[in-house]
Amino acid sequence: MQGDLKDSDRMLNPVRSYKDPFVEDGYLVLCEVCYHDGTPHESNFRSKLLAEYAASKDLEAWFGLEQEVTFLNPVTKQPLGLLLQPEEQGQYYCGAGRENIIGRDVMLEFEDRCAIAGIKLAGINAEVMPGQWEWQTPPQEALVVSDNLWVSRYILARVSEDMGVEVSYAPKPHPDYNGAGCHANFSTREMRHQLGAGLLGDLLHVLEEDHVDHLAVCGEGYADRMSGECETSDWKTFTWGYGDRGASVRIPQKVKEDGAGYVEDRRPCANIDPYKLVFSLLQTTKKSTLL
Image (tube, rainbow, N blue to C red; front, top):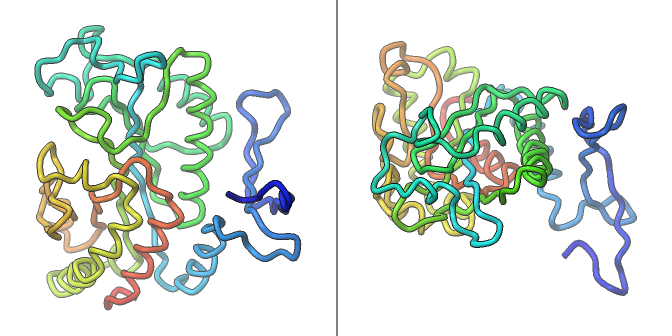
């Protein structure tokens, strides 16, 4: 809790503003929560990321997040995709047609509202589980990508109010189908310039070394999603591979060919706190020779 009955007042420190996509000439203002003396509240992890970002500026790190979301029936709390009576997954991913897709109207409205707010999206697509969708952010600096993800989640919640759907970020909304993640693509200036076998090996070593600690910021319920099945790695073991969607960390084949680029952390769940996730990746990367 940020306050209690006897001590309920907190100071809101505005840190970023957006054009309000729902109110003409209005603004959405993202704020940090602080005590009266300006000390960040315990729940205010953004302030910690701000300090870490300042200390890691030489990395010139970029992050691109892939936010998955599941639409639920607000009455039954079941995924809307069950209306399609799916026998298996397959035809829903990036699909088209009423027999394959539920929720495109919600996502298109969401995309338009984000554009009005000034939040850039790299794309949207229907996911493997029916009734599940994803939006991607472009590569951005730590604070920008984290702030934008929080505000875009708010925008989707507002859009869903008029669409008769409930938005879920649960890592495993249905036991028989793919879970929902928030894969993190990240790079440093050095990685974008060169990422040969030596540097890549060093980065993977520190990622494996911090695997257990990193899982703590990968979202509540990560073990349910990361079972080793349904395109996930087993949370108990750190793995990596070129083009491997079932690994903890995937190295794109293009990176292997070019010897430069980025890596994809596939461990984070849909319900992550982006400030904590990005903070963890920055701290781990600083341990490698990629500074």
